[in-house]
Image (cartoon, rainbow, N blue to C red):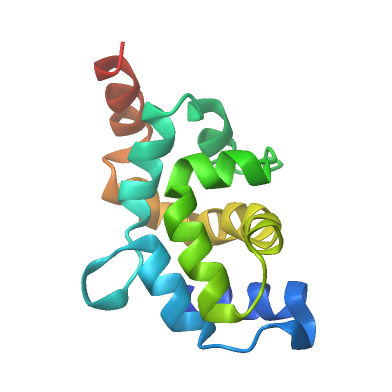
Amino acid sequence: MDLMELGTSLIKSKLGGNANGDIGGALGNLFGGSGGGFDLGGLVSNMMGGGLGDTVSSWLGDGDNDPISSDQVKELFGSDKVSAFANELGVDEDTAADTLADAVPQMVDKSSSGGSLLDMVGGMDGVMDMAKKLF
């Protein structure tokens, strides 16, 4: 299962029949990768810069994933993007943020199995280097 399918499946299972739009397209717009793809490397960098380094490290590692709040989701992506995501799916912004707070850690966790996402950011050393540059 690719990341788009995984994200779509996670959002669908959380929202049930309440999602009325193109979930994959909405996720692509939210994550802002080229061609509507996912820029998870950018997401990891933003989290490191936004004081969520320990949280994202837990998602990249093999242990349990630390939670992220809906408010942190809004800060991470920007309220405007979360609002646009919500509008695309026909749900309110709080529901969208709560749904993303559940889905995003799982998406990053699954994409980092076998180190593929870690490779994108230069491994754990790359993550630590990004963190050092912020301070």
